[in-house]
Amino acid sequence: MRAGKFIASFIMVVVVLFGAGSAEAEQQSEQKSGEASTPKKACFRVRDTRSLSAVDDRFVYVRCIRDRHYLLTMDNACLGLENSIAVAVSNRFDRVCSNDRAWITYKEFNQTRRCGILNVEEVSDREGALQLVKERKSGSSGSNGQEKAAAPEGSGSGGR
Image 1 (tube, rainbow, N blue to C red):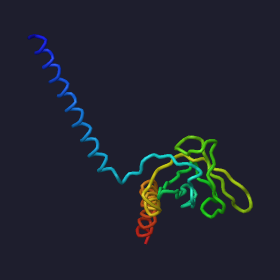
Image 2: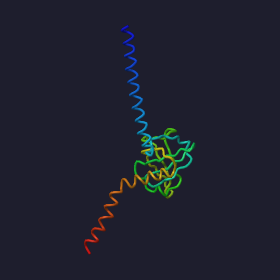
Image 3: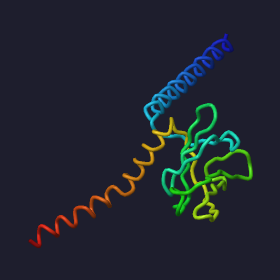
Image 4: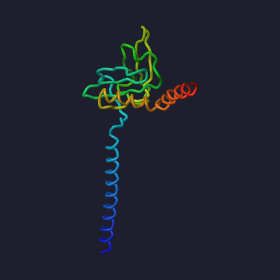
């Protein structure tokens, strides 16, 4: 009889624990669905690449097969990348992921240049990539740009 009560108690504890775990997992999935607009870290295969285009000297948009889209963030500003030709992705392996020492090569004024890839993020499409770049640029330089714009107005009106 005691063994039966023990087993029933054990089963009850297991049910409660699994129930709490599934509720927690449900809350986490709801939080993640609310954060669906944030891009997720990703990897892609080099041979699946269909096109690459530089957004500016720091970001490159990649379109792959099966309607997959990625935004690459370079580890430094790659001078001349925005106006370059013949952009290509290179890696020692077939896959390119964040921080795996992959790089892009590009031609600028008949000179081949190389720039490291810091981050690979999956995005919805080209417009999503452009929007993300715009948000990052305004977030990193938005306050500085406002301060620079405010300073000349304040000094100009005070002096006259």
